[in-house]
Image (cartoon, rainbow, N blue to C red; front, side, top):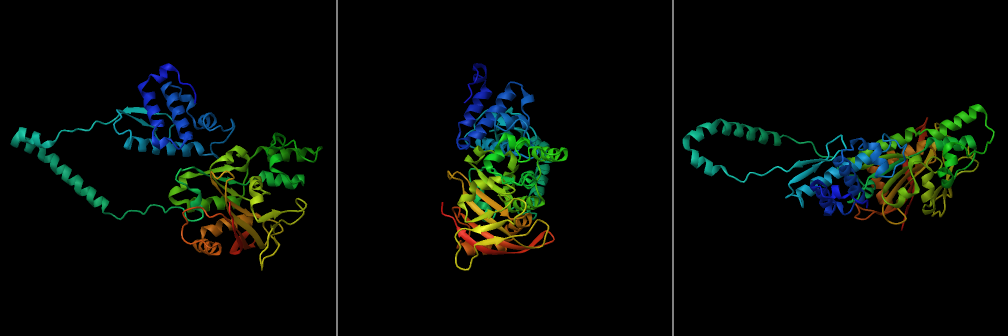
Length: 425
């Protein structure tokens, strides 16, 4: 923990911050403690220029200096959590505090204001003291109070809008009591296009290398001016697919009352340490989202590819059961018509400190079909039956399912379950 200078340590407002961060609501989240301490210290020192979303992301969350706050909303999500934790503190353990800490909506400054004093006097002694004249003066106010009460009763008796439902299975497994943000990692279309142009497979290690990110690590060492320009663009921009947008929209609708916990990130922004803790949704197959390689060895249905850009991609069934095929081939290319395949997998992180949902199709139509499959309550029920799951299990049930869809002109429809596996961590 950063050493606090004596002047700040002696400030009653900072002492309040110390009591807050030491309270039970903050014990389970070091990230929220660090965030509150950082914002309070900058506010008390008057360094408001440092209280921007981008600067907080870099200073507190360790984001890269050039990260995009448009594509990464983790700071906003954590500040919303922080406001809730502050309310929890002042409604409970901090009820007797003489000052209250607030973070105004739309800002990242920390405000300190006096707590409202409760008036312990009653009206009865006053009425007895002042007699009839007091009653006459009080009458208009009493009538106004009666009108206000009547209005409020009528208002609360009006039909209320039902709150959004909680996320259904299997998405519910990602939203845990610790309120970790669920990070949705969309595919890196630039990576997929670069593979096709370079005609070479790419490992996760190579994908993370500075040379690959800068566009300098390609098999064609003497590209034309046009090819070099294209590679430069692909290595320096962030693009995703329409299928990923459909999946993100589906996840937001399914998240219900937990949708504020969703954080959308590009595969290019991820780092290995990000996977030490948390809950994730990876959208796309290894050929468009290389982070799926990270979990490939835990899956029975694995994407395979021959010569990059020339061979059909397919799912390899490592341990076929009776009636199952060893391979499942999809579309020749995105936009064509025919059958495509996708898998839906729920896995634990290696250290058990989170869960991962993977939606991967051989082509974009398959990935889109996986998202649309989960959006349908009937499909979710059939998947539970195929896995032998009933109701909403208390603990995550890890699994993978292979589904098939028929695509017509790039639009998937008529999905069905081909095979399932229960994964035992």
